[in-house]
Length: 66
Image (cartoon, rainbow, N blue to C red; front, side, top):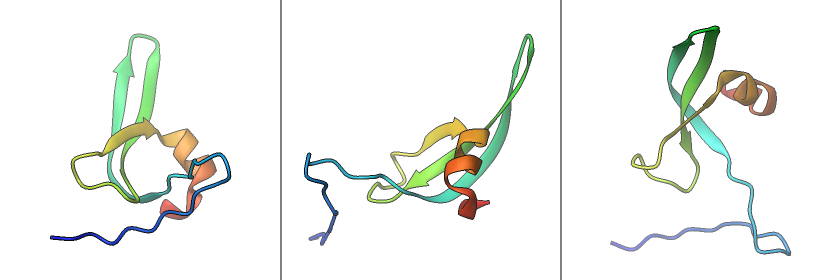
């Protein structure tokens, strides 16, 4: 199987990773409070590279996903 992948690189050979889907919402309960987080599927990565991130950060920077 061949993959055709196009990534726009900046001059310093970096690129901006974009989330494409929120898969799960969860709340981590700590001793002093609760921390809402989301499971994120990222562009250019498969289902095996999902990450959790702070819901507040994701809402601020990627509000179109909510």
